[in-house]
Length: 184
Image 1 (cartoon, rainbow, N blue to C red):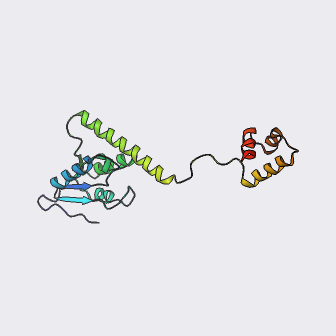
Image 2: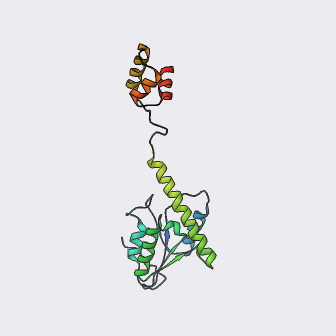
Image 3: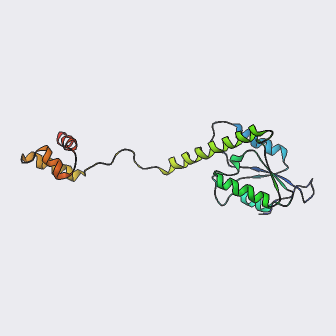
């Protein structure tokens, strides 16, 4: 993918804006800050992926950067969804000789810390969301005995030759489990 050069600037120094994947957030801060990127940059690359993956536009954008280019993003949460990918992408930008400007990291140390706090919260949130979608299994305890085993216990109990204690010992379950099955 060849990215267009900014026509108003010389070819050695371009400002490119990157509009990332919308994060899991209840705030509309991300939409507002993404709009600032649109207003500031003449070239804006919009992410087409719906989730962070190897096929993201950001990796192509970083490979196309030249010495002296500036990549502008609204927040760290649009660059990666984990710390190792964030570090790898920032290093790649610097290795290209380009600079990265993060709009919500302006000013003093407090803004830097707040940006990393927001990034950390985003990473935690995305892990929770990913885990919830993967965990479709039934909740609760597994039954100790199958229905066939329960029928065997009932028939042995009804025969009158077994006590609750003897059934629990034979079936390797608690007396309480045997009582529950008998009372069904």
